[in-house]
Length: 265
Image (cartoon, rainbow, N blue to C red; front, side):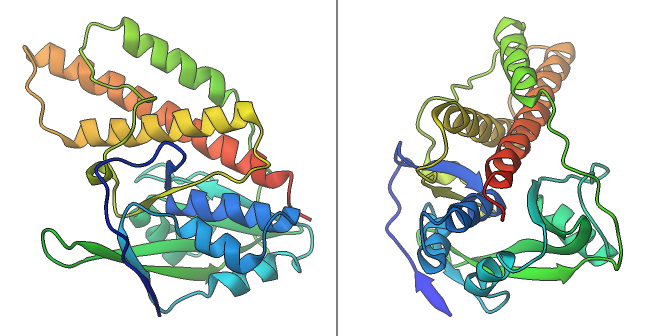
């Protein structure tokens, strides 16, 4: 078991992007497959910062990355599921249940068949002022001979921008500024703050950052109890937030999967 308990600063540094742990791992797995970084460094960087954290026994991520290179016609995609919204996941039921509970997973296929699902499971440790997390990665084999449809590259970027414009023009007041630094305290246990691989092009880098920050901020706002001037105002505010969350989630999945697809052997 490896441990790393860095000091927490008030804000996430601007050169780091808040990401679901599965997104960070998949991006750096792509960097390894591209040949930009070794598997040990890729795993270390993917862990990121933002929490006092340690990695528990579970799937060895070094071995997982190196095995990706040996899978025939391998593809890996990010999935950010929710209850009732499990598109992109593969069986068995245990994999779907864990992915939904974690709200994230990496689905790996080989020659178009479901190979396995990789899911981070996070336990919070410690008391106030010294909180940390323990992360265990579980690899669940896919259902035999399950054919997985190709990833759908939709207009996720355009829909995110439209949702941001609708929020800006809406009557509900939202204190969301995705470009501003994110407080460390706002980072959920299932997320980390990591740098993006250097080969990610500028437009993709901008969209990844915007989508991830918007998703994180809308999650935080939806969980908060904010007073509204009326019931209709509260309903309108929740509707705008859910539209933003859905659009940013789709954009993040779309962009991470697109970046990594170009790196798979």
